[in-house]
Amino acid sequence: MREFLKNWFSFSNKTNLAEEDKMKKFLIVGLGNIGEKYANTRHNIGFKVLDYLAEKNDLNFETLKLGDVSTLKVKGRTLILLKPSTFMNLSGKSIKYWLEKEKIPLENLLVVTDDLNLPFGTLRLKTKGSDGGHNGLKDTQDKLQTVKYNRFRFGISDEFSKGRQVDYVLGEWSADENALLEERLKISAELIKSFALAGVNTTMNQFNGK
Image 1 (cartoon, rainbow, N blue to C red):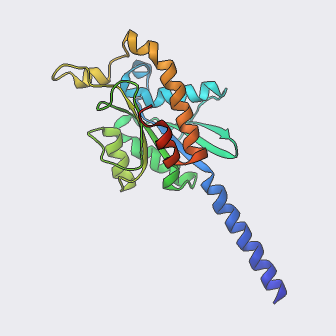
Image 2 (spheres, helix red, strand yellow; image 1 turned 30 degrees about the horizontal axis):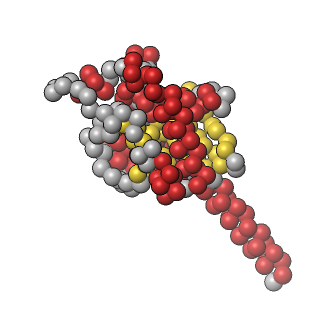
């Protein structure tokens, strides 16, 4: 009986540790389109935020299945940075694959995307919501079969004339926007780290609208 209890407690402790380790792992996904011609477009702000985060932490991305991947360690947390290589409209395929491969719980997913409905540079973290007409979020919702996942929206504004939306989101940043991007990217990186360290609610309170 003593040996049984000893083995049971050992198994239980290992299980608890495994669950604890799982909760310390996060998947941070930047949405965008692959290829040099898209690199500096508004629609690729998700890639740009992750590139900034990687650069400031001396990290490189490795091309793996369905995406470019890097790993950032922050105070006991593991942040897997993913830039899907599926193109924007099939982002969910890559996200679902890496969530399952790394055994990351859905609540530890954060999707970084552009948002036409927010003024340029406005940051907004949400725990659920519609795709808002965004094809990357639409496919993510479809593949995950839920609208309840964390998304970090980066405002790109809607300063385009009627019928020019596609040209606008696939267009490059203006000179004025470029001048302000560095500061916005820095705060975006802080938001992502806060999400992993302090949790989504605290991060929303601290950064939304900042």
